[in-house]
Image 1 (spheres, helix red, strand yellow):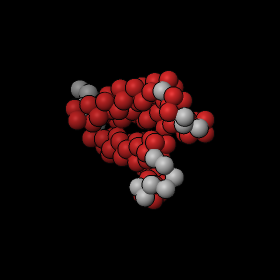
Image 2 (image 1 turned 60 degrees about the horizontal axis):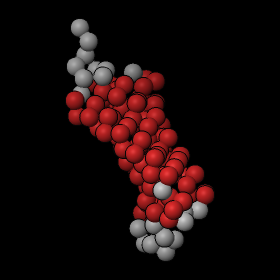
Image 3 (image 1 turned 135 degrees about the vertical axis):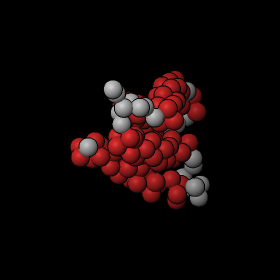
Length: 123
């Protein structure tokens, strides 16, 4: 008998996948209209790619047993911090004080993504 899936984690992964596609389309088709520099558009693209990849990882973790759910939560946290902070950095001006929070959140999110993968290794 297969382990029970985590419905909440599954929904988070699916919603994250949906929003990554929408944000990717926005980045590809709209950021240039707002005179966003190419380097920031590249950062946006990286954020959407990481978000989509790790959304799939969340779905995988959600479909496995409770031990795997910890990895899924690490991926969800990583997406929020890593990709979310990059989105924020792209759309805020250099002098905006919120950037002092967003900048440090990016590597913490990256570490959370790595923790998720590490948890999959040891399970």
